[in-house]
Image (cartoon, rainbow, N blue to C red; front, side):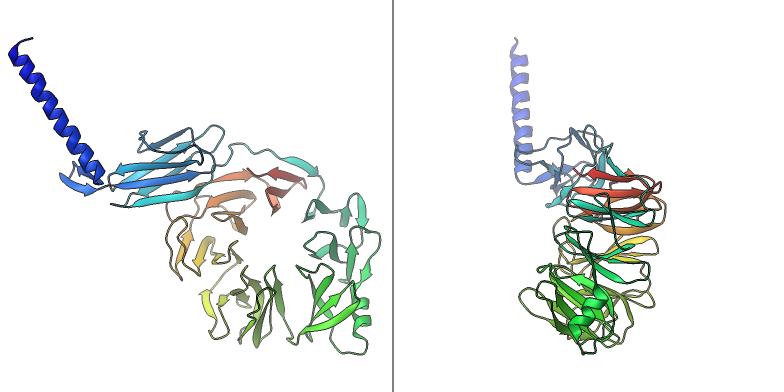
Amino acid sequence: MTLGKRKGLFWGAVAVFFIVGIYLTLTGLGLAINWRELKLVPTGSVYLRFSEKPNLITLNGKERPHSSNWFESGLLFRNLLPETYVVLAKSEKFVPWSKSLLVPAGGVLARNNIRLFPLESTSTLIATSTESFWVLGDEIILKRAGTLKFRQLELRGKEIISQNFEGNEVVVEDKNKKPFLINLDTPETSINLNLWFSELLGNKLAGTPQKFFFHPFSPKKLFIETDKGIFIADEKKNELEIFSNLKSTISTLNDSGFAAADTKKIEITKFLFGGNWSASTSLKIADLKLNSNANLVAGLDDQEKLWIFKNSTSTPELIENKAEEYVWSPEGDRLLFLSRNLLHVLYLDKWEEDFRKNIGDRLTLAPEHEGRIHKISWFDNNHLIGLWDDELRVIEVDELLPLNGTLLVEGVKDYKQFGNLLFYLSINGELRQMELE
C-alpha cells in the first residue's frame, strides 16, 4: 500500500470518527439535523402500548429501531424529527391499526391503550326465535313468542323491569302492567308487588308503585317509587320504610347511590361515605343518569336538552340542545352523548391517560362508517361500542385520526356486554354469545 493510500485511509477514518462522534453527541443531547431547513432541532419520541404485540410496525412506511421489553407490549421510538408520522401496526389474524402522529419536539407522544381486534370473531348460538333477552350473571332469560323463558321454564309476566345485582331475583310486568317479584331459585312462585306494598303500608297513604329498583348491597330490599314518595321494602323482614318524600318523576340507581327528581328538586343519596346532596331545578326532567361516583348527574328534559348537575350550590349546566342518548364512562369523569349522529365525549375532570384534556373540554368523534348511530355504550375505558343501523361496531376514543375500530357483526337488533362476554340478538332472532379478547 502506498503512502498516499495510507494517508487517505487515515483521514477517512478520522472523518468517520468525527461524523459518528458528532451524531452520537447530537443524539445524546436529543438533537438532530433537519436537512430540509438545515438546522438543529430537538427530537421527540413515540411510545405505543398494544393489547397484542404487533408482528410489524412502520413509521411512514419504514421500519424504525425501537426499544421494548419482555414484560409488556410497549414500543418506544426515540430520536424522531418533530414531524407527522403515519404509524401502521400489523399482527397476524388481527385488524391493522393506523394513526397519524405529530411528534412533539423534545417530548413524547404516547398511546397506552391500543387494542387490536381479531379479523374474524367467533360466536356461539344460544337460542333462536328470540324477541329480547336479559343477562343475569351466568343465567339468561329469553322472551320467545311473547313468553318469558328461564331454563326451559315459563315465567309469569311479559317483560323484565328490574333485576337484582346477584342475578337471582327479577321484577316482571304482566300484560296488564302489574308487577310481580320472582325468585329464580323458585320460579314457579311470584309475589304481587302491588298487594304486598298495600299490605306493608296498612292505612298509610303513599300512592301507587310506579318503578322498582333492587338495592345494590341488600338484594332482599326494593326501592319502590310512587307519586307520593320513595320507599324501601325489606322482603326478608317484611317491613317498609320511607326513603324520600320527593314525589319523583324519574330516578336512577347504581352501586354508588340513588338519584331522583321532580319538577322542583333533585336528590342524590350516596350509599358510601355520606355526602348526600340536592339541587333545585325548574326543569321537567324526562331521564336521569347518576355517575359512578355519585357526584354528578346528567339528565334530559322534556325538550331533549342535556343538562348536568354538579352539586347543591351550582345551577344546572346545559350541555347540548338536542341529545338522543347519553352514558357515563366507567370511571365517571366523562360523559358520552349522541347528538345529530355525532359522538361527543365531555370531560368533567382532568384527563391525562392518553392525551391531556382539561375540565370542560369536549372531544367530537365523527366515525367514517355510515348509518344511524344508536344504542351507544362504553366497550372499555378507551373504546365505544354501538350500532350503525344494524352493524355492531367498536371505535377508539382518540383525538387523532383515523379512529381505529372494527365491525364485530352485522344484522344486529340488540346487544349486552357482561364482563368479557358480548351477547347480541340478530334481526333473524338468533341470540349469540361472543367471547371478547
